[in-house]
Length: 407
Length: 86
Image 1: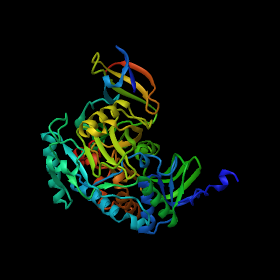
Image 2 (image 1 turned 180 degrees about the horizontal axis):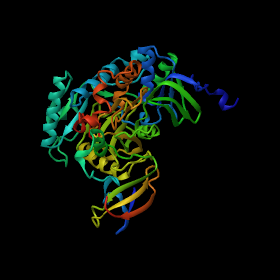
Image 3 (image 1 turned 90 degrees about the vertical axis):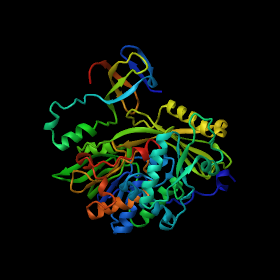
Image 4 (image 1 turned 60 degrees about the vertical axis):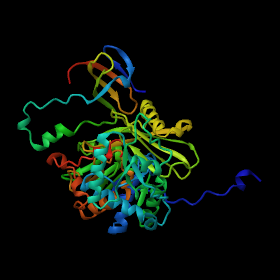
């Protein structure tokens, strides 16, 4: 008996490999978390099931596979609190919604303050969050030391811990399971998921976009919903639209598997460290973006070097951990560090982009809001403030403080 | 690490430089004459290509020269470098 005969067979696939049809009611470009969630909610909440999700690579292989899975809603402005808290509430019931495990763990997120201006900014944000009904708290250094014993809160480090904001309902989830859950649930409702299907151009007629050319043929549609993260600018460019986006490589890394030592997500905007420990045991750490525009999905090593130096200052026991692998995703950053959701300058084309370094947490929230916007052909109230025209009206939503690099 | 060929000092690590974003963005000659849309485009919209990109770099830890670089945003290959105003 050969070895292969004794091995178990391949498990059942969670989704089919669909062939593209000639026409759909809605074509979603981008098979990441946001695109899949959008397709799911189009089918589930709005009964629009003749939907295709086009993915140039494999399902959820872009930023969905490259982020640090942090989920929180403690943003400064009312508009941001609105959409991120909507998302956090959907996370809290997502496993029941999708009938799948996503390992959503509400272990709390701590944002450290290292200097006086961090303290002022943090306390201001806690106050703003509380006015928006969010579970934000301010903790002093002693309380932080009790919450995260491995964090050095003495006055020795170069980056002293003087306090921090804490959101207990925040946490992490297993990114792959989230994408797979949305893909399976969307497909069960009739959505086609078409992988290895890269968009090469669009057909327009007056102020309507009528079809898309792909590496797997031409597809026509009623409505177009772009959801392509770092490549949104490239896609919009094929429609002759220039978006206020700059695409940068953002890096992250994991350590080898370690005993559980950290049950809280710890972020420090000032020193560009954010770390959590996955259920399996790896330390998952996010680094900063490279300053220059880049699409290579590889970041500069010095960014990681600086981040590790700061991480070891804050967590002395990390000094002997080994880095297992590092990678980068391409993040599309807007001038005000807030996303763009809404109409493109075409009657039937929409865009969801500009989530920059923090789109994962928004996956169910923006999926539902974007689907609603596309279904009803008008902005959902939570999406309306994030329309593209805010850069012309000047009504920006400046989240650099709450987002920074560590979104 | 990305290496930037400074026209004055030669090729150095990118950590010696500051990034100056897209080249060829001139201050409008008559800003007050612009529409809101044109002003927004000047303030907020920059080229963001996947491919060759003309950008500005500043040799902050070297000769302090501002210069143009044409770099490929996927491969980081540099094609042309020249001194000159924005």
